[in-house]
Image (cartoon, rainbow, N blue to C red):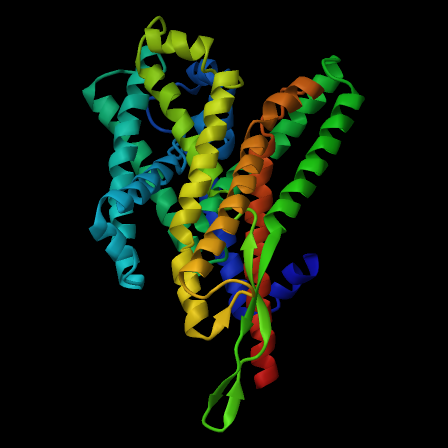
Length: 421
């Protein structure tokens, strides 16, 4: 991996893509330190005391703790993407646009941008009202609320633009890399907090060693699941075209165990923040806050169950959108291929769908287990300064693997071009 990264800086166009990506991440980190006007950050400490908002601060790269213009992070864009994916099932026109190629996807992307701005403004208004109730808004008034809401909305729109620029002109998925950069930026602070806990005698060196071992085991399991695949054998019949014989070879159709990647866990995490966000708009003694604090707080059994079920649902939902067994079976049949023992056409599609459903279930359960691991890790090690657990590791490992694969693909393409020349 390190050799590939070093080699990438020796290739001109790939070096430009990497430098552009690093520049956009630098802009994100600078923006995370630009405060929103008329907000007292010290009043936010009560919100950050809860682990849910603490984790939200992690993925925003500390922007929520400082309440900078990027305080809402990229979650409105994720929510808008979820809504657009759901609307594709309900509105046939959107599904037709998605199948029209690049032009159709551009229209859907534009709708998603509009939805992101609307959702960001609504969330910013609600967040500002909640902050006003805890006394965090200085000089409260209609004008102040609008200024804060517009600043937060502009910050989210800026992050969305940065992510799209990285995807278009850089390396990797821009939105995922922004979340990755936010998580990684908090690691030095967490290490410093752990050292303070060690110095105070709150935790011992055995606890730190246990945490490192658990983290390594989780990383190894994440890599194994992400790289794991079921290979379905496909044989192509011999065909005589003119005077030449084509086909006759055997290959395979790779189906990944974790086809959806980190997307389901990000979708589920975004939805799980809705109840806490709505509860922050209401008085602390309201029935919703009482329910959240008693039964649905971060780490509770009900919270973990709902979170896990959401992840499994989004795993199936996302895989169903990005992978069409009928289309794959038709393409295999078109080129004279077949799965040994399975008739071409509809039986092949049913067989692929059955195998994919089992793999998706395994992948969804794995993602759900990874998502609820932080509670067990905190309970076993007693280390509370390191907020992220399986979810953060999954995002970091998944994004790192995807980015390195793209770099290696560019290097491989460059090698073939050099060989041809």
